[in-house]
Image (cartoon, rainbow, N blue to C red; front, side):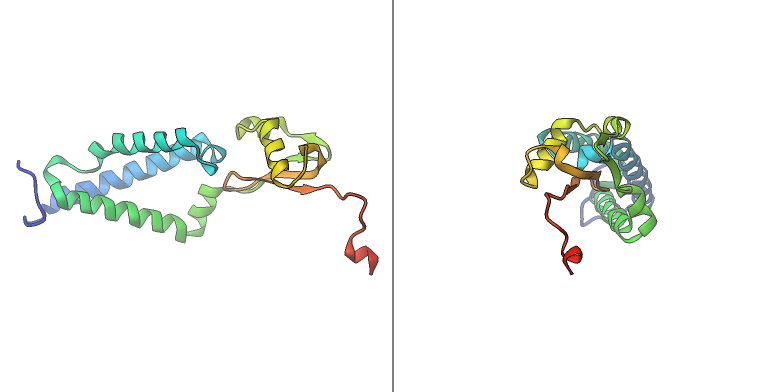
Amino acid sequence: MDYVSILDKPPMDAIGLAVLQTAVIFVFVLAGLKAVGRRVFGEQSPQDLILLLVIAEACDIGLTPEDAGFWGTMASITTILFLGWLCDRLGFIRKAIDGEPVVIYSGGRLDRKVMKKFMIDESDLDLAARCYGIADYRQFRLIIIEGDGKITGVPKQTGHRQADELA
């Protein structure tokens, strides 16, 4: 069958198949990225971009049937945009994708299991400390990995009394 252009009648059966295949691939890739870990994609690096481009190229063939042509591509793009919108709008899906904040460091102790799970090492914690103007992660009272993969911390008090203690 020849390529279906914008001027041709849309092949509805091929478009329906394109929507179904796109939805299945979207969910599969989303689940795969979630399985890899939120820390990996919370802070993107060049290899993350390459990985996403390669995934996109690998999915290209599977998204639309050959006989769907232009209209199948439009259906796939619309499906991807709709599923992305749905993920942002439905709280339970957003919560499942983002996850909950997790404590990594508390009471002077590192949770090595959590660090291994989220592929974090002490150099990542020191980098987060430097972002706060602190030399070392041990100067935090608490360190948390947020739902989006970012590392945040609560610095220890430096001998200054809290404002509410002064009142």
